[in-house]
Amino acid sequence: MTTLLAVDVGNTNTVLGVFRDDELAAHWRIQTVAQRTSDEYAVLLKTLFDLDGFPWKSITAGIISSVVPPTVFGIQQFFKRYTGGPALVVGPGIKTGMPILYENPREVGADRIVNAVAAYEEYKTGCIVVDFGTATTWDVVNPKGEYIGGVIAPGIQISAEALYEHAAKLPRVELARPGKIVARNTIHSMQAGLVYGYAGMVDSIVNRIRAEVDWPAKCIATGGLAPLIATETKTIEATDDLLTLKGLKILYHRNQAGQS
Image (cartoon, rainbow, N blue to C red; front, side):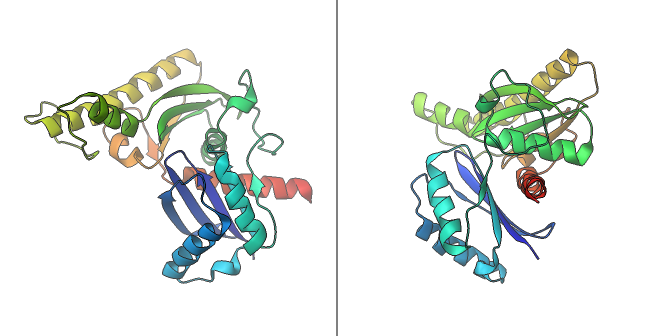
């Protein structure tokens, strides 16, 4: 039985998932630390594995997607030292099964390609993937399964921090739904602007994308803040917090099949 450790490194958080064959057995979200060493990963992962009750050295394979290049060395050293071999890294040369129609395909973040692959594999139709991460991204796949491009905007957390850092009298606030759009205190006013403002932006961009293409586009949300924003939108049709991990599993199997 293959036990695959999938690692998705974002600018703020790193999501890890363990697949036993095709079943996601466990997953965790940790803070991204660019200079974390292989031994630190080992200690951290052993603790997480122990909490979920299965042997941490049962990992037989790995795949890494990272938008923070300095993190890859420590993670890859972890795989080499503790699992017996290197992990597959999502990047140029990897078999994705999806044509990338960007002007320069190397510019597309690994996580965006992974999400696009996972969404198309699941729905087999033209789709828009909205990823609520450090940046908010919209990635578009046509009905033929080709990645045709997308949109990038500042993430909701970045915007919240910008308000706190650049407006002297505004506090740092929890990202939460305030209940009403017309708020009666500063914290709720900021929350209303962030949550409902981002929901409106999502709907506006999705509608513009749909108007620009000549085929129906299903809209799927992912990322840590997806559950907060998606329910306030009119265009998001499905939410999948684990879409990126599923995409990493798909890419691992596609590349294993290509080597056999």
